[in-house]
Image 1 (spheres, rainbow, N blue to C red):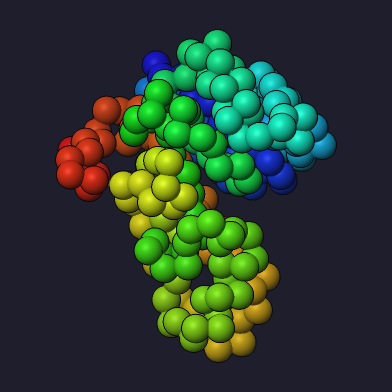
Image 2 (cartoon, rainbow, N blue to C red):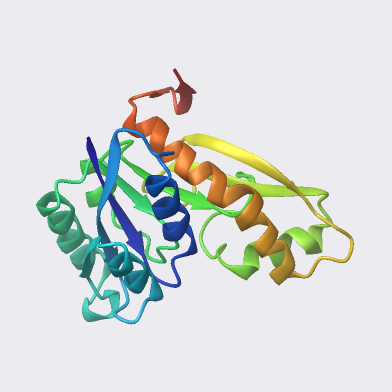
Length: 207
């Protein structure tokens, strides 16, 4: 049974999708053992507590730079014996100190079809605002392994979502979460825990 540590910063809707998947048996051979938040008032912490999941708080603003923060984060992950680390609305880009210590053991969900609308600064509603401004007919979500390059790691799963003519960024954001993010993130986590993901030449193969 693999230990899954989830990193959060806000409301925790993706965390809730993972908890629901775990409780319904969709995540095999893995269990969420700890949720670590970069903010003390993140509602995601309440979601974890309601389901009896251990929580820790590591406030980003308490640190002078990302390197110091990353050092303590890595220490926390080691203490929690994390086999897999999942970014679920975690708003800090950690130093390569962490990603190099846990290669292909950290994953993130991004609300677009990478390589579209991704990279530094592309998070939250901005992703959907840009998609609508470009007039794309399809958007979606991507689960990828985390590397030192923001949104640049090997792609694990993607799911497309239709864009409607009357969409607002908020409506599109909700549809992408419901139809893509909340489905492929638990799926990717389960595949990892079942040892079914293989990375070769920056590509992920599902065995």
